[in-house]
Length: 537
Ligand code: FDA
Image 1 (tube, rainbow, N blue to C red):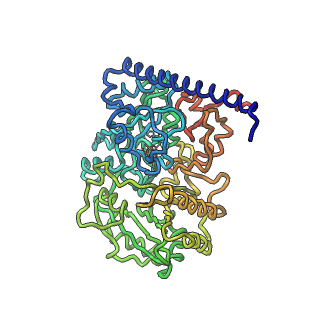
Image 2: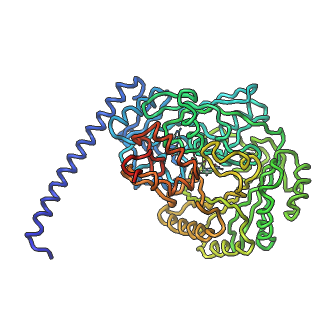
Image 3: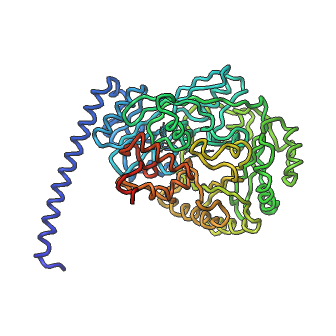
């Protein structure tokens, strides 16, 4: 027990810290009042789209776009205010007033960020949720479209297919609920990557609000900033409200399949062979295996999109991957837009419900993920080590490895054309993924994280090195973060930054320094500006 004399200073400091705390709370409340006052002076319409924590709809608006349930538990930090703008002027007001009153902004489009960075923050923050910025206008003759950031990639392809009678499309990820804002600004790729590259490769203009609250287009933002927002992660540079894109041609008939093979059906040999053909087959053919455990065996589900009819597909498969034994009965012809729904669930349905693409009501669940790029095939015998990790888990813990083939257009574009740098030399991307259903989030989280980290560590000798590359759209805070006070040096940030962007990281720093030198738009993995004090050392 401590002597009384020693306790007094503690009590005094406790009392003074209480006073300081209440002073801090009072100061914060005053700042919030000032923020609200500022908003009302800047915008006549803001009250219609502003949610304070006392508003009855606050909680439902907050949760509406959190796709990963890990980030919608009561323990997560909540925004002071949420703004769901309809007009650019409301976004401009929110930027100016947040800056003036020391609040950070989290921009949310579809809300899929793997680490929840569009919905949570450790410092006082507001959310600008672009759910009402979801207009899509397609010009079929010009083969272009303008799409607002809050639209989903499913809605985008639905609208393009409708307007073009299924002859045009846009190369985006395979999950239709992903938001355009986060997806495009991080690169964005899916089953058309071999034929057409990434989404960001096809952006030709954009409208955004910068740190001064200015509305910019490609011409007024300049080519450096326009380069940065096409794959460098939008959240470091401002708020992108809409994008002009060049559309790509798709045939009126495409073919899909999803063929499972267990260990007893030679899954290992087939996966191994896939590694040698996946990036070399015709660019119309995308074959992406999913590897998971089913009871006492492993299953490799070979899923595919082919841009053409079944007969041509069978000929190509016979030439390049006869070991899979694909038959006509395994395949289904459909339109490209129908294939998006198919590739989301691998179900062949008699009629495909396009509401899946039109709406935003997708099933939500807790999930985690990590990613790697491979420049060489994994040795065949190394697959056993992967299976062992799956078999070591208890019955309730399961994960998934998704193999995403490279080659074709994605590999032809230069590494520095846009910030997304993962091009020639990669043969596939590997996504480590786990999700769970009914189980309490806390109970399941650690087990699944442990499993994915074990797999990730096991894969170290087999994946890209120096650096071990990663993809910002599969955000992973394990690879490094900025410091919470916002004073991260370029060198510190390069630990994670070079993994996402390779040498493009330094050009991103240069752009950041030009457009946001005070580092207003920041988060755990935002690009830092060059900092005279820290970076000269
Ligand atoms: P969200 O709104 O969470 O934003 C993500 C990040 O971008 C945040 O930092 C946010 O602040 C910022 N941001 C969002 N809108 C912005 C704007 N308008 N201006 C500036 N910054 C903005 N990827 C892929 O390439 N291929 C795929 O097949 C898939 N599949 C897939 C499936 C599932 C189930 C998930 C959860 C994710 C994927 N992804 C993917 C990853 C996906 O591309 C990535 O999470 C995107 O960033 C999601 O964009 P959202 O707008 O939905 O997210």
